[in-house]
Image 1 (cartoon, helix red, strand yellow):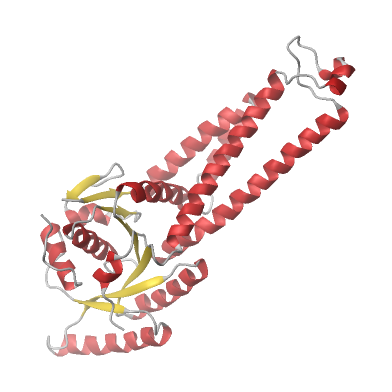
Image 2 (image 1 turned 135 degrees about the vertical axis):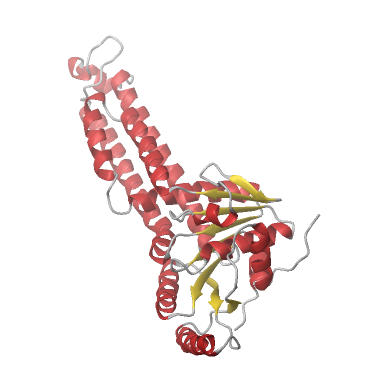
Length: 353
């Protein structure tokens, strides 16, 4: 089934490009973004790949702060290490503000251990991606997300549901703890909070019966609990939005880029299954660097092998439409080369003035 890539992209607000490393994901992402910008849409191109190929491909300094690559086309290159450090810094500030001062050492120890914990980088990047998606939906017509290699991408797509469920669990625990605390205070009337005269409720038994006003300690704890709940609610809303966007085939198209070789084909089949489990619709496939049939015996033999691998792909993913891009003689560097590559993928020459 032939994939009309421009038609697929034109109807979406988000395009996620994934696949095995080295198959040309960044080139396809850039060509799609540039093609849509030339058709008049405001486009944000975002890379989560730690290899930083985006800046190299465009011959520009992109970085986490972002830059403009072409008319109507902006780009951001998310730095995983910097993103993780910034994420931990913000978490540390919040924990130190919410936790009692004598636990500051435990907070530092927790953050030190968390820095290298499994999934920390993915969670931090997902937070940043969620922020970018939320902002881009308000400011851009299209977000093109150039992801890291397949394993990272699959985890990234599954994380919104995982972290939303985890946050819901924290909220339920917080609610149970709050209600238990209220019940204990209501039944026993005993607390260590002091009233404005410095007396505890234990010093004045009548206070528990009559309902003494909340003192500084109790109020401080209540403020901490309210802020924790507010943070968790905002986080849940952000992940819920991200999940709703990623799993809506009318809003998001996931495009897998691959080479017609054994390992990329097998990884593509596996990635498609992981996306299905995560509830993400596979919009189509781009088979990149296809060998010509009339380029001499060597390339003809190579193309025959590619045909064999593509038959495996057809058997495994019979409903997935695809487009094939030929092996090109030159390096793809700069806007002009990416524009020509976009034309190969179906994006026309017409530029909006």
